[in-house]
Image (cartoon, rainbow, N blue to C red; front, side, top):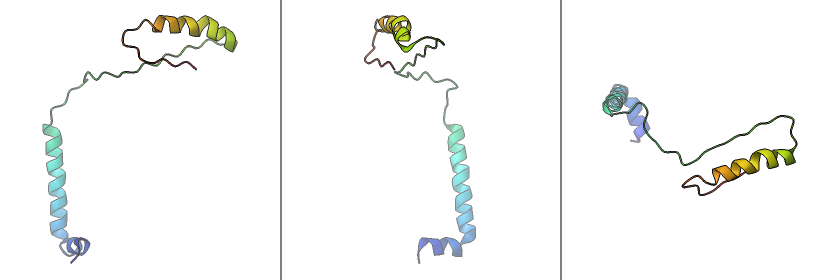
Length: 83
């Protein structure tokens, strides 16, 4: 007898097993210790500069290059991309 036919023929047992698993999962979830704001380091930083009415060349010269030179001094910086 395959498992589907067994589950259909024993509907009460199937529903009881499902309810047991749901309750056991809920109890396990509730008993797991959780921290409200865990300290998870994210090794990435996103910087966005917006200056309307400026040409792409001026944007690179006046905004991007000075910002890149300041960010290069960050300790632990491995990669930097500009677009």
